[in-house]
Length: 199
Image (cartoon, rainbow, N blue to C red; front, side):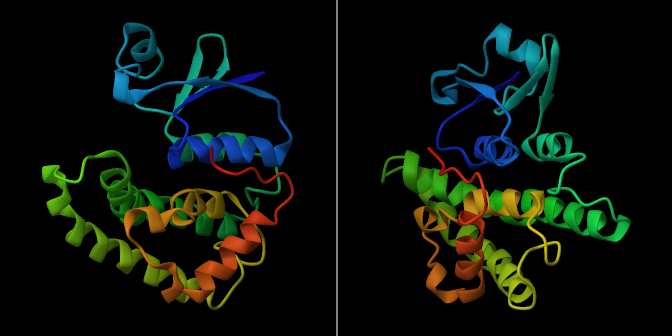
């Protein structure tokens, strides 16, 4: 049985958790509070020298870091990762987009507003983060206005990756009422078999 080390409320940790639920796979969850330094202990660093969550323990002594790598590993030979070469490349395109253009803006803005005090100096980053985040959301809106999911007609790990922080983007100060196709898509994701909310 897989063991998933993560922090509740983290979109990156939610991604593999959601896919495991879709797949109907049993797994155990180990809560890691990064704010208390629990991802910097010698034991945790032995699993992931980068000291970040999540980590997926595939079997004793075999660990995988990086949430989108977990989606690819767990999604192999399932309906959530296409076998067609072009569709698979489309999935990868959106996974890279999520980590480079989406998560660094939307997730970080959410972290600042949700977890840091109002007087924290990082509040000064919000205007730039929100401007860049809206650019990413506009790209998503344009794409989803033309097709139901990110890799075409089929729900995939690309949707899981982008859903994780998009559906809570309001917590980062993003008004999703401006993006009707994204709101439609969020509803589609929530309707998928095995869906679980982010805790």
